[in-house]
Length: 319
Image 1: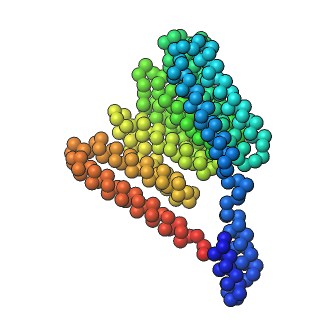
Image 2 (image 1 turned 45 degrees about the vertical axis):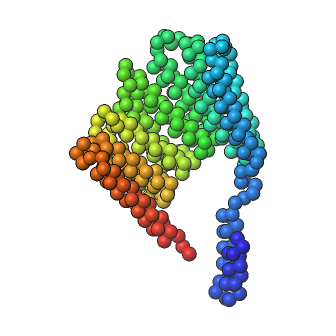
C-alpha cells in the first residue's frame, strides 16, 4: 500500500481529505491485501504434490501390474489409498490452519475420484449380485454412489473442491443414465445433466448451496452442456437451440449477478455452440471459408461483448 499511503498523507496535508476518511481507506486497502497466514506456502504445495503422486501411483500400479494381481490385491491397491485420502482429509479438517483446510478439500476431491475407481474394481472382480454382462447396472450404481459420496463430503465441507466433485459426479451420473438403454441415448444423458445443472442453480439461488460463485459456474456449465450433448451430432435440432438459449441465459444471469467469470462461461459456450451449429448445418451451403469468416466474426463480437461488460462494470465502481 506504499503509493496509496503516500497519496493519502499528501491529500490529508493539503486539506482535501479528512483524516478519518484516510484511515478508512487504509483499513479497506489492508483488508484487500494478501494475508501471509492464508497465502499458499511450500508446505501446502508439498501436500498437493503428495496427493497427486499418490493418485498417479495408484493408476500406474494398476496399469502395469493388473494381470499379475489377484482380485483382492487389485481391490486393496486402490481401496487403501482411497481410504487414506478420505481419512487424511478428515484429520486435516480438524486443523484450523488455512492450508490444512484447503489440503482437506484437495484430499477429499481426489478421494472422491478414487472412490469411484474402487467401486469399479470391486464390481469388476466380485460382481456382487450383478450378472456378468450387466455393465449398465454396475456403472449406474457406481456413479450414483459416487454422486452421493460427493454430496456427503460437500455437506461436511462446503468448499469449491467438494462442489466441483458434486458437479463432476453429476455429469458422470448423466452418462450412466444415458447408457441404461440398450444403445447409448445422448438425449437421456444430456437431459439428466441438464436436470442436475438446473437443480443446482435453483438451490444456489434459494441459498441452499455454497460457495455461491463457484457453484454458479459449475452448474451453469452443466445446464449448457446437457442440452448440447443431447443435440450434437445426430441429436434433435431443438436441443442444440436449447443449448444456445441456455448459453444466452447464462450471459444475462452473469450480468444480473455481476459475475465476470460466469460471463466468460456464457460467452465461450455461446461461441462454441454457434460455431458447431454453423459447421454442422450450413457448411455445405456456405462453404468452409465462409463458415470460418462467420465464426471469426462471432469471436470478435464475443470479445467486444466481454470488453463492454468490463468497461460498464468499471464505471459502476466508485472512485
